[in-house]
Length: 379
Image (cartoon, helix red, strand yellow):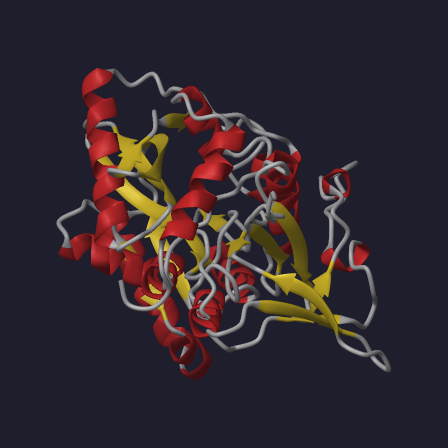
């Protein structure tokens, strides 16, 4: 007499995207690419969007609606199944049951989640806040943990960590919120003195931003205040950097079974229609990088070594994109890392791994599998 056996269910992946940061739209685009690539024969998928005001919403599983179309950026609110309903993940390590609540309705169980793939960029998602929530909930997730996410988001402390590990960084200055709010003249003087030491132009940017949003290239003192206010629209703490003359080189790091490995690097060529590789160049005008970067075997090996060293210095997990300048003297200077780099169809991270022999679907699968094998908590 044969027994009835029930086949084990597929792991359930919640793709969480959107969020409250200024990078909301890019997160939606990234989610669309991930949803298109994830193996539906291997995983069940639950798309959860976070609106710009912080509501967790059950959204349509419709990657085609998540792309930039006719220069219009997508938004979670346009994808939400309900205008008021909210998705709740209990802060209880004994339960991974996701629940949908709607006004006047009995809460509806959406099933358990085995792993979260958070494709949020910027504050309230990439900075350790969401990671901390998932740690409290006991749900494994793709990418860096709380500390690495926080350090990777804050360019000041990222650079401080790099310096402590002997990694080369360029000159920078930090203007904290209280400095600008209480004594803007003194803060301005601090930047002018920095420019006197390192020269114009300067780059003024949010200390905890990404996707090149809020960054201004400042050629002289006349544009400084406007640049500061633009950066402060995204973050009250700002970073000022000197111009490093050289080639922009990027390198991806991915977690394998035997540890992190580096991809072939890419080069971001000079953008003729833009002052620098800004948001418009990256996402609207589709500026393309050169993969692999034509920098020779010795320089390639060095930037790969430095990318893995940066990954290890910040205690990253899963993935990182490390951005460098190759100076005119032939030295590499690390600019920053991204603990959740863009996964849009034109993003450099998946392109570098594609050239390294890891296809987009395999890349997504490796990240999910790595997260499933990690526990939450101290590790």
